[in-house]
Image (cartoon, rainbow, N blue to C red; front, side, top):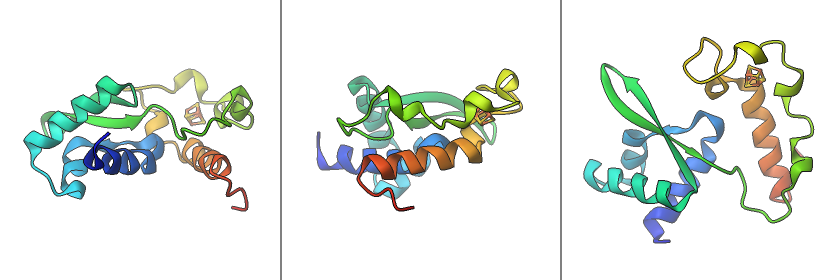
Length: 125
Ligand code: SF4
């Protein structure tokens, strides 16, 4: 992985479940839209990133999500413990392109952030 790809992955992982628009990513990386698009495709091919088509200001673009919050080998199925979705009253109505979306769910976002800190050995917050 190049340093540009490595920096992109750090930014994408930091955005958690909200993900980041491709255009915002390449602005943060201070690269061109052409290089940014190629970078996003390369990351998707590695299997580390998922690209989801999204309409923004009348134009189609992609939002990028990290497929894993952490690459720690300590991760296991046990990390699903405490996931708010299991007890959420909105679960049946929640999904991509629905009025309730995991992309904008503060509860899920907070849980993933705690999970990420815990996996990185910082469980004090
Ligand atoms: S993402 Fe949020 S709103 Fe959707 S099911 Fe999970 S906790 Fe509920």
